[in-house]
Amino acid sequence: MNDSSPARSAVPVLDVWCELQCPDCRSALDDLRALRARYGDRLELRLRHFPLEKHKHAFAAAQAAEEAAEQGQAWPYVEAVLDRVERLDREGESLLLEVARDLGLDAEEFDTALIDGRHILIVDADQAEGKAIGVTGTPTYVVGGQRLDGGKSQEGLRERIEEIVDRLLAEQDR
Image (cartoon, rainbow, N blue to C red):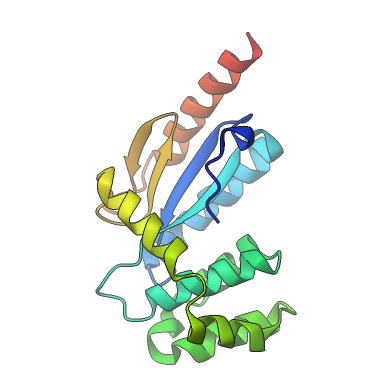
């Protein structure tokens, strides 16, 4: 779900480095929902994948999120998986397919995508870029050239993101 082309940068972009098996990323959902509600289409939220080695289904979940994006349901899928994060460790890919079915997506295509690896390069590229800019855990946010690490504490991060976005929007209005 990464399109960093200049044409899409007409509004501020919030890159959300996330891992779909991460309880902290699930906790961050309320902040992301609040940001979407506050800014609507004046802020682009962009999911960036950063699967952590300690979570054995995180890489498959990132690929599944990319398939959901292909089928037009990226954020609903991401939110539904994060809402079930405690089950993902036990149920793995069967949970990913269940979420796809629950959202009315083509679960067979999800299964095929996980087998043929058609989204691996996107996930790998996100992870490599994250490492290159210093992402070490999730959630991590990048907005207006500033990296904000939510892996240790999310306290005050939404307010900081809002300050940056408000400044960027004010600069655009000038």
